[in-house]
Length: 327
Image (cartoon, rainbow, N blue to C red):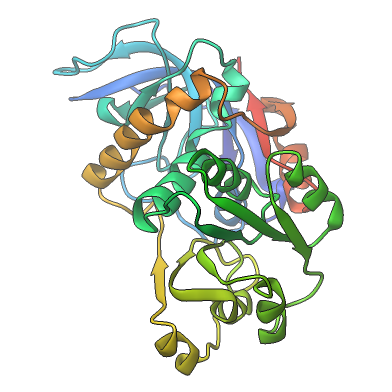
């Protein structure tokens, strides 16, 4: 089969499309014929040699989310049959014509979604759903601040906040992304061209503190978020685009009885991944079927254009997901 292979740590030029052995479904697994996958920041980090794949998945084939159809099932796999349309998250190996996944980590693709639309959903919506609805326990009427709102996870969190009848706000480095986010339901937003300060946090919360904050940036955003937080508010730490270390005002955190919660999906145990995927399938996928939620695709590339796809993501100009069409 054809697959994207990281030939060495480095820039987009380190990516090659090569012939590699086709995997086979083992006990409890499903072989999926991949029709589309999507690009994530983790793929860029893995390409640079900073984010190795977890044990049990291809070390040199990136890709964490996919949409395709069941090709075959392994021994004792009973949930799916050949020909069914499925989507899912995987530790790696999705940027290939075939992959194998545990049968309980797959979800059925709603009939109204194309392969490209379905491939743009799993990573961002499972991450945002687990962080916002489950761990932050968002409730109707609460105020939510989403940093890097123009990113895939940011736009998913925006839509899920509205679906919960909460009120979403956002930050971005550019005004055009805030304008586009408003079309999807963002209440208001702020441009943050440089590292935010405590003063920025107080400015964001001038009309009221935030009950939940989705922080995809890290770095200086963490302390600014504490300034903007309502008493007993929850800060979900998801990404480190602005830095992996932060200096925070502990007095502010204590006085507000703040909850700082770190979360990651890729490193979780299989049973945890199954649980978050199945809850997502129950609570979120029906909202795509009835039109409450929508996919946001920035651009689509063919498999042979994988280097251009990485360059597009590294430009930081994308709004929504970058999708790779495989077949």
